[in-house]
Length: 422
Image (cartoon, rainbow, N blue to C red):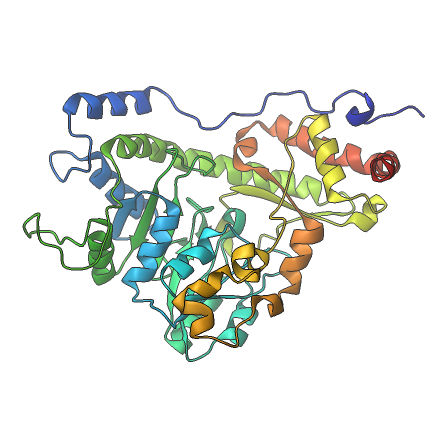
């Protein structure tokens, strides 16, 4: 038998053009021109402000009363921690399988991130792991809806209520996701979203916070607007806030993007579930488990859990290379857990008052999250959300690539061996 795989010169299995990101049109253009010609480019309170209108609409879309738009998701996390009163010496439980900002925002608040393990079938934070880590210092939990899959929010909220903790939902992957009849972001005290270039709603950069708590909204607004308060003179600063305001240009883009979110989220959810059923039939491949409690998965990431033993020990890196050669942009998941980042492992974090000074016993080299370590080192693969905005036929084509790789696993193993010898 000749060589079948595209990495050996065989025919590509997938030749269709998947959707590009971001998606935009005349709505964004018209909104930007409206702001341009108005001359009111910074955040405006009146008349007809783009940012203020977006805050209200986005909050309502996630079943919350209040919204605050800001410069990015990382800042949004920090503002949420500030509003909840998190300070030096406090501990905040986070997941290690996420972008750095979930933990670094805790560091910026002079508090200490404590890493809970993830569930092996969802890669979202494990409520059982959370409970084991609670101490008198614990003040908050930041669950991350990894890839757009809602965490077990009922269990997390029960733990928080039992111990009197704040819950800040990291929804940066999860615009429009729903769990047990409610929107993500509406379960915790505050929900945090990002509109960075790769996100399901994008304005290049940007973030938002949503809440149903009037007092928290008051603090969030003040902290993001130089410590000011509505109804007071411009040069009155009531707390140590910063300028994290969003421009009206970005507000215009986000209002147009929000108009697209519902239909896009429905398409991602339908295509992601359909593709997942096809991929789950292939030995050695399992997708995120979606329980009946998940009304809607946002599918920022289409996550695949890879078992090399079913592919003759072929490394994940070779699977990624072969999939790209066949025409689909498969990528490795997070390659290391957050607690293995240099800022935690090499003592850089020791310069912050929230860590070693107040916690001389804390050593991130001893952090034990075996499920996360296995996901990072061996299992996690994913496709980005825009690939799920394609047609049903394209989903069949993506699944066919995975099947081709499995059917030709001996050829893949030979290729991997050649690379190892080179």
